[in-house]
Image (cartoon, helix red, strand yellow):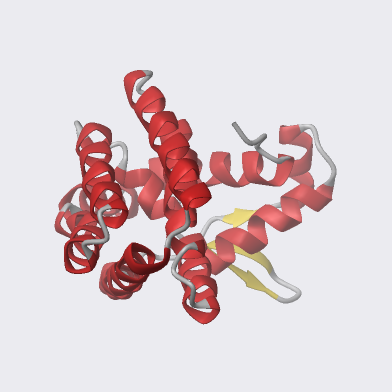
Length: 220
């Protein structure tokens, strides 16, 4: 399993803190205090905050500081809809173009997903899940689509991690992964596209859990 970098560790912890309500909309995040809290230099703190800004969780205002943003559900839903189409297209092309070594890498990622699901480790599952999807992006044979998919995946990371906290989501996600992989390996392009698209859209359908969390944060 790939090692989690210091900036990624900080980012994950801050994402959880924002989503859980430890930091609320409008709160200012002080890099100096965060560096002391995490026991690291300001470089991974800065990298983590920049990543959170790309995700829309914080806003960095020149000469003012970094602030937790207010959550826009409709904007997020639109991003997930675009992600669903990108993933569907990538899966369709991968079903046509995937190479044997990529099939093996996809199976390894699936095994890692299963292990993390059994361990009930949502973060561990997320990173194995990211490797699974990354193999598909890289196997589509379209560099522009690959870049766009990876870029939007980074933006949606905190929300996709949050979805894995929904009861039974990891088990269902793993089953969806297997359906996608089976279709790709079989060269079933339509089936692969539809399975990959629905795998992302189901997260939109479960927004009630995410919206409830954020409304609680905003109202307290």
